[in-house]
Length: 458
Image (cartoon, rainbow, N blue to C red; front, side, top):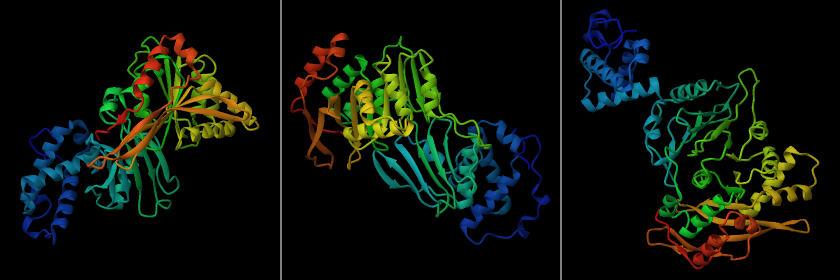
């Protein structure tokens, strides 16, 4: 395989056209698609792998474009400058990146990429899912991209191992499902990693919460309340956790535990821990529960768990109950009441035989606030409940909704409008608020929030 002559692109000169066949003797492509496929194969045959790896991407695109121009002239293929540039970008993305997905990954407005086979690619933009014009050439092209992702993290994806979780270099989470489990070809789901975290002011501007709700959440962060953020997939749980983490004092030692690292903490004293899947030999797995247990031995001031989904819920409650105030985690649930039930169920998964009343006692002793976030039909993500875990009446955990979002209608542009119903009842953690000197600020924020209307800007 050879490179472009007199360009520094490789070390060997490109053979003259006569070394393959006279141009007039070569078969002519019957369609533009055939011509492009033929050009693609000829270019790949002329590229030297060592040279490709040595050049920066911008220089590589220029050199590949020059090579395409030479081959098009040699083969008498009609290609304008835009087509040559497009083919060069396609080839470089296939060689160094994720092929046609590179354009979507570079678009900051896209939050999720969902590939349902080679010809159906969907994206989520501002909460709305639409089909993209991006396509793969065929199933083999898509499979090659999936295998490249898996190999980069030391995993294998094929018929014998048809499911893989991975992470891209920028932190984006990836899930891959291969045939025979995926009936219409390989399926690829990418949750993009935000380039920058949002603060409370930005969330207010986007209509995710009111100013007074933001004040309450900031006070909760300063008072070191233990917080669970609940919601569905893509509802904004991690975004809200990142915003709340800004209230943490820079002097505190924070240990984060995640399946896939997404948190963007700004403090200097942060230790980030990430789980490890089984190796190709079926060994070496490190679970979230292993990491939470180890984090307790690392002298943390706060432990932040990216998402609780199993037996590590018990270890999370133990951490919150043993002096690590201000710890946070997220959970998948539809309401704050459902979140409590899910925590109880997950503790039972890891601690078989533990009585329900003992688990509920652990929950009310550990968790101060549960925050519910939802993605509504207009695409907006909003805080819909802030709930105080008050105590127990008999065997039932009692909850009090400090804020609850009530939908009142829609704006002329189709955006949901509503207001927060506010409870000014004394919270169960009022002593902790008083200890940190923020009890008066808490009551003032609640009084100002009464009858406030939330008008989203999304």
